[in-house]
Image 1 (tube, rainbow, N blue to C red):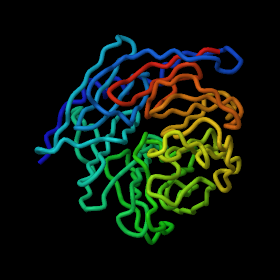
Image 2 (cartoon, rainbow, N blue to C red):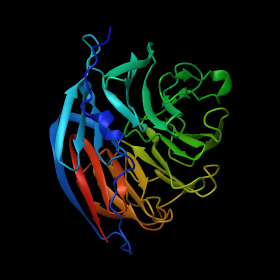
Image 3 (tube, rainbow, N blue to C red):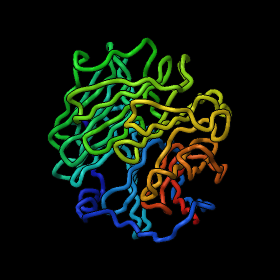
Image 4 (cartoon, one colour):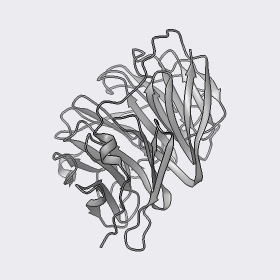
Length: 351
């Protein structure tokens, strides 16, 4: 039924070992940014991944996906079609041996690289309310994907066999969602994972944090002080530096200049959240990331209207550039890659 296309030499690339990140020994806060465009095309990109060897992968709308070899600086791109349908992707992930892409809307199609390097459907879900937003792996065996409710709970998929099969968690085993509570497929960062934990940020009429401490076996839900109560309000992105320090960001994409009730910090594993920099920059952002190796103090937030930096857990921010990106992934504390409308760029942070 589904026409598979070869994902270039992705399997070979992922078998090369650990990520080849350049170590940075410099101290001091970030003082500036250099944005180097490396890809331009007519594709909206809201999900980006750094593979084990440092290569950069993306998937976007109309079935388009690509791989950038950072050593040769060469792109390979292709278009995946399911019969006559060109799925749009907002979530990708990888293990040491496989690459995964999850489409939004109906039908939901979750692809995995097979033994021959081609993309194969390992999960399909059909229904008028189906809409998946994000996907992450705890390790090479266990992973999680989440989507909007089709019944009385979030749609949560779990794999225990490296992504070969996925099972949807019954609503009997999940907290009930509120009317109008869903998620935003803005940057594949609705889910954060650390150790055995996973946190999911919702938005809309309710914006809460759903948490599991045992890789999806049991769940609880925590309130947030984010602005909520309208379909476009709430948290768009969540990240955790470790099992205790977390940050959520969002706002209202219909009011991109709004900056109240859109940023919150947790220091107790997501149980409680405190608004920070309320009424101050940054305004609406679709992705937030802790800077690696900086003790949970430094954050970068990206969105369509710029990139912002905090050195004090979000209490104060500096806008680094007006150039907008939907999603960003770090290589180390001075190097990242970002993607957005029609482009991918390399980000170099000065210290």
